[in-house]
Image 1: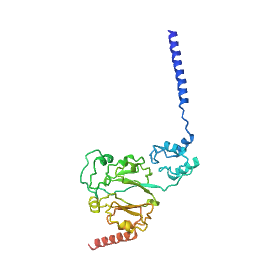
Image 2: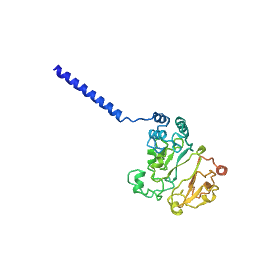
Image 3: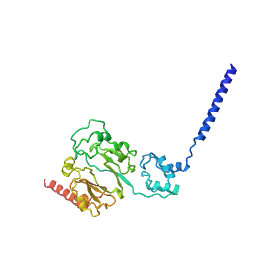
Image 4: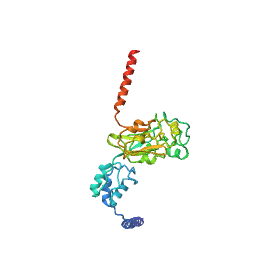
Length: 295
């Protein structure tokens, strides 16, 4: 009995030893060397794994940075210029400084200006709806409102407003990763320069229908009147397919296009009220108070 137990123990020990030798040999045979710089660069990155750099995650981006001679075209939108500067110092390679960008929603078709004319009975997904359905309004270009963009945002920088039915972008939280841009089947989310104080001017409409049709579908639709193009002193506004587009590279934020737009389809953000607008509001307030006194 004792001999049988001993033999069993020796057999198991022998099998364990053989397995260990085989595993060691295999590990040496298929060992893949990894440059320690990759781990060091990965530690400098934000770790968001958002694919904003165009690669599946921060580790893949770190490998690309280490193994690429010229990294001027590589950029981490979440970390921004500060992180890329640290990477440059670590690797001794030149990186290009880029202007911060932010996501903007190029649609103002909330429920009060873009009435529903039908109801989608399928899954509440923008991707699915865009494939089999034109949308619940007469505008075939606007936001579908199901929040695919919100679901992919890893930074809680977006939410769907319950009143308007439209996504809202929280500027302070947006990291410019571009996930929402990729997720939107209508292509209505665009990355634009953030500028100082987050000042932006852009056309909040993508409706390419002719003026009358577009206006009927949405009160804030661009009607292709070209007034903004004519008044722009820098040639930043161009017309294409009945739709105006403001190029952020040439736009000087003068706001002339905003004032002349008859449908208010041009959006301006974070600008102080113009003096004449303040005066108009003050005058209206005084008139209202005077009418109350007279009454």
